[in-house]
Length: 337
Ligand code: TRP
Image: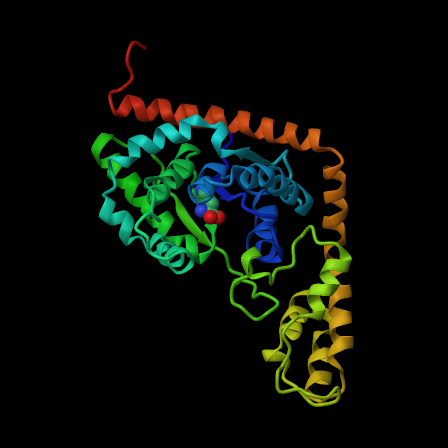
């Protein structure tokens, strides 16, 4: 047993990962794997709570997300990458924890509340939006976290209420059945969410405003050319405000050394938007080039990706089954042993 602290984190495989994920969590995970034992879960079961009518999409993205991880520098010798549905222990833990959470508590969970509201806005309120599985996904997330005895869960702000819910479950379990589960700490990601090319505070597939780690140079350039700029600037040599321009915003992320010049030229009306966008597109392409290269390698070696997932899953299963054993003992459902 290593005495490193344990991290559990993960993503829903509903699409390729974009630069918002990169700055918000992937970069951080690459660092954390040096110091911690890191489990990274590809949450296909959780993805299905929202996409049960589209299993193809989830299936396809499990491999895609794994490739994104590996391309960004998640090292399978340091992090265990695994598939949630391949660990049935997680489903079993979810059932046992279900007794410790009231339906009204789930409905009051701020993340769940927001998601229900979004569903209503998208699909109308026909009374059939909230399935039992969807409402219960915070419980399954508690199973994900506790199964691996995670001490630390690095996530974005939107996930905070879910981790809070996990802590409640842990406390309730431990006070009722004995000290079995580890109570996790949340590690809030320091980077604020990366805004979309259109200025939207959220970057996402449905909004069409994201740059994906797998985008080709042509796609990146096309997207950057359509980014939102300072709308008060009409002519090429009008002065403008880079602080309200998405191109300025992205230069801050991708053009660190040139930023001061870019911003002052922009303010002085000494830089046209077209050239400014071309420069940004090039910098983003250069920045993502090593990731794209590694991605090509893994795309051509899918067998290797599958082996990495199988290896990670094997390790995750060992840990989860030990936790399940302790849980069942504590709950007195360990028959004939
Ligand atoms: N809810 C997370 C997301 O939507 C994915 C996830 C599932 C997760 N289980 C987790 C994150 C456990 C942290 C810990 O991205």
